[in-house]
Amino acid sequence: MNKPLTCHNYINGQWISAKSGKSFESLNPANGRECIATVPLSGSADVQAAVTAARQAYQSWRLVPAPVRSEIVHRIGEGLLARKKELATLMSREMGKILTEAQGDVQEGIDCAFYYAGEGRRLFGQTTPSELGNKFAMTLRMPIGVAALITPWNFPIAIPCWKALPALVCGNTLIFKPAKDVSACATLLTEIIAEAGVPPGVFNLVHGSGEEVGQSLTSHPEVDLVSFTGSSQTGAEVAAICGRSHKRVSLEMGGKNAQIVMEDADLELALEGALWGAFGTTGQRCTATSRLILHRDIKADFTAKLLDKTRKLRLGAGTDPHTDVGPLVNEAQLKRVKYYLEVAQDEGVTILTGGKQAQGEGLDQGYFFEPTILDGVESQMRVAQEEIFGPVVSLIEVGSFEEAIAIINDSRYGLSSAVYTQNVNRAFQAMRDIEAGITYINGPTIGAEVHLPFGGVKATGNGHREAGTAALDIFSEWKTVYVDFSGQLQRAQIDNR
Image (tube, rainbow, N blue to C red; front, top):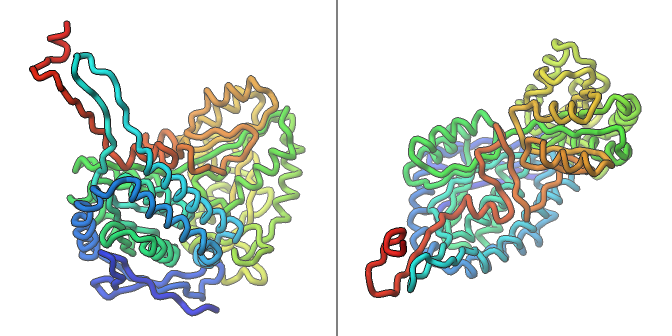
């Protein structure tokens, strides 16, 4: 058993303890008796110190040329690359993700760094003709100010990088509030960012609870922007607080994603997608496949094959290279998944496999839940409507493509979707008609790439998109500039008409 790490806040270029002197433990979800790190339990006083540092640093950081800022972001990518194995191992120990997925999580951060390093030499505005003579018109991207980044535990490197790196390139200063369950990962990420040469006060880390640190950041009058990833319920509260103070807010929230498998699909390919989409990251992704919408002609065959493969999945610690499915992140998530299995039974659903906490050698001290398949699910049932965030997938039978589209849209969420078909007409109808921010054709609901916009519709988000150039619209303001070199007053819409 490794010696626990000692984490600190990082404020104004200094590693410091919480002003309260209090701390909490980050535990290994595969073995609740192992402490990964002791972490400061911060409060509003720590938030104030971070905001003060970020506000002061903003005045100089915003004037650093964007290509210079991007060179620092490139060095962050190099630091992530050099410590990829270390980060992935820590991530597997701290939140349970299997090693191959943890490596992918870090790689996404690396990709993000190198992508946004390139954007620092673009940050394109527009030039356009004026309707008046001897007049020039253009647009520029301007930084917003102090940004609070509130991130979840399921992607402890990728999601903070999605937010922090474009924000830095755009010229903002940052306060990073990670989920408590991945405090050690957040600390190591911050070390890499600091070592890359980010000036003091530009990037700050404050550990603690959402109730204390998250709310203090969201409501602070000198925080100009909040970027939040988490539940739709919490996101609505964040949006309400930000709305009262006219603060920009970007929300990436829940999903109830579905994969449609039509009668003409490549069933083996669809099977691989369903298995990966439903049980990858133990179902703890906002893009996880929570619903499988199966055409009646292939449902029996597909279900039998899915059952066979699901029962062969190996549970264990994420650090074990033989593990297919790791633990849930904490006891609260385990209780949540157990609760929804009780709901499923009350609704008359058939549990084909799984349905209970996993027991056995190496599992008894962790938060393991058996990969679960629910059959006989109808679209209006709670297990088909509410986000479970665990290794649970519901099977819904349909008789037509039109019915499948109607059911996939029968959700308050709209993040990711997938359709398996060999009919090109159906593929293009799905692209047009599915109410989701992401649609995959003949691919699973998970697998976003950093150079494309990420986000959803309805209760999944508030209209913004992360990743790609779309993230620049979160972290910058448009400024329109007119230069009149006519030497006289020219009135648009008047003097030229």
